[in-house]
Length: 273
Length: 273
Image (cartoon, rainbow over all chains, first blue to last red; front, side):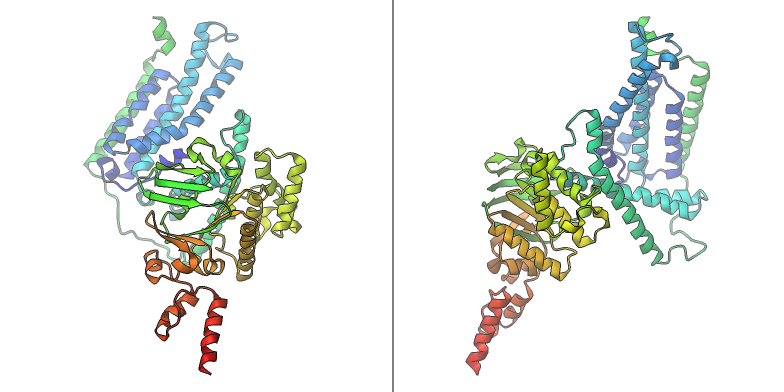
């Protein structure tokens, strides 16, 4: 469950923490779009390094690495499924005609699977930076100032705020089931997936129960009674924010340009040169 | 036998929860672990079945270091009943819930059925055999959770806050039940805040505060020491409080048992007449 750790906000003061959440979100969204734009391994490797300066500036390297480690299982899953499906349905590759036979074709297959995995890692990596450095309160404020109805903002911030609670709970549930002899790492792949049922069911049941309790508690405290809410704090853009906007837009423009006009070579092509 | 030698434990968050614990729990002993919130009680007992591994020092269960054995293996001898039954219940029926651990431990079907029957009757939940555990009341769920641990008849039973959320009658029953287990030469370790409960059972008590053992001894000795209990943020049992207040009259101050108190007071009253 360490993947959740990588999304848990901790109060630290740094340039990245003080950035406007809206702008940070823009930046992460640009990264997201870029990661979706490219299926090329080299381009994704480059993308992987983009959030790194932010990680170091925000001094969250340890937590960030933990989120990546936590995502490793899913990453392996994505890699394996891409390999398997790519092998049986090679028609999805322009470079491969017929079935996968030659070494070069295997390499293409491998590169595609690696690229898809890296795309996922890039997404986790960039969103992890966002959540690690943005407090749920700021996030809610940002949504409200973007004229999103308060009900939605509240639902969203509540969901974010409960992520660490759920993570703690998942850990307790895992301990409780381990104490009843459950071995999560035992058995083949399917068995391992099935091993998570005793974890997921209590987790979901408790989450539903908690949401009902929360709703009752909120209503008994007159939630939604006032029509127009005001805030003590308001978000204002500062110089660093404007710089990040420019950087984001330039990055996106560059990415679209490369995507349209520059043929990025695949690793296999580079190697055969 | 459980031996704890200079146990230190630090959570990944950097919180040092245990700071050099030395303790021996003999076979067939009844031990209560008490202390304020965050004193390290649950952290300590989670070492007894290997859910947590020492940062420094070691924990030996029947002479084997918990570092060398899996939780599943240790759990075969050390049953751990978690505080909240909702952290473990997931099966469709109570019967399946109780059989879960037995399956994990590889019991044969015939033995499994026998043990499930035994546990269902032991905790008076046989009539809910085919009911979903989610349909039961809080107290019943707690009993099912307890049954699901006792089903494999572990030698050591750890109960984390067993009395929370139980009505008086259930608490009384639970108390009888725990004493009965102990009478059958089972080692029982209870983590609790409930002084009245401990006073009535009179087990050996270890009092914890800020990751260290503050005091240990029989409940009668430890819980009647007002200085010690204040340090651990608990209050003496009500009976003891009365006797402490009446100490000026020459009454003994180490009374925790209602029957003993009645005897002493009756004696005094008769003397007067």
